[in-house]
Image (cartoon, rainbow, N blue to C red):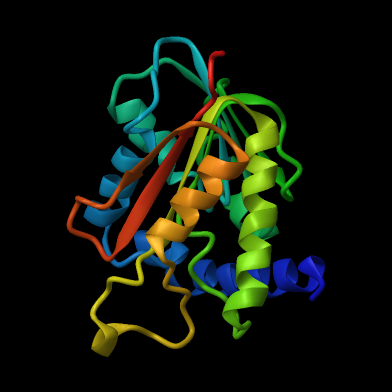
Amino acid sequence: MSHDSVKQRVANYYSQKLENHGLTHQGVDWNSTESQWLRFRQLLRGFDLQPPFSIADYGCGYGALVEYLIRQDLSFRYAGYDISESMIQAAGNLYAHLANARFFVGDQLQTADYVVASGIFNVRMGYVDTQWEDYIRDGLLRMDRASVKGFSFNILTSYSDPLLQRTDLYYADPGYWFDWCKRHFSKNVALFHDYNLYEFTISVLKSRD
């Protein structure tokens, strides 16, 4: 499976979402602004956000995380990356007035204290689990290489009600990805599955020894 072909399909999918729904939670395929904010809180949950910290947003969409960070009164340097050119254009226009937020087309992440990814591993575009999991592993390796202090990501959980699961989405085994991150990245890995959404968040903190 070519990861380039996967990325093109994903980019087209989200560009269409943005065209249909604009700069809203639906424009990045979330079901509400409240759940979007809750996800951000979980992604940052394990981080030491002492100012000034730098953060890379992998699959940033139109940059909603920037607004969340501002609302939390945090001092930060932000870089957003997305493979959808229309998303990056929208984000750049929305936050053109901010000197501490930059946006880039693609997935060549520059080094940052922390790297986060929200929702980018959910829509598997018709690929079978083994193919999609290979794509996820590639993404996590990119996040690990780019992060100095740690990274976090979320995925839909296999503990979701089977009757409500959609065939076009990927529902992951939390234990598998926790174990994979422990074995490949750091001894300091946290799994958060306690915030009343059909997903989990994994936070990887770089070992200090």
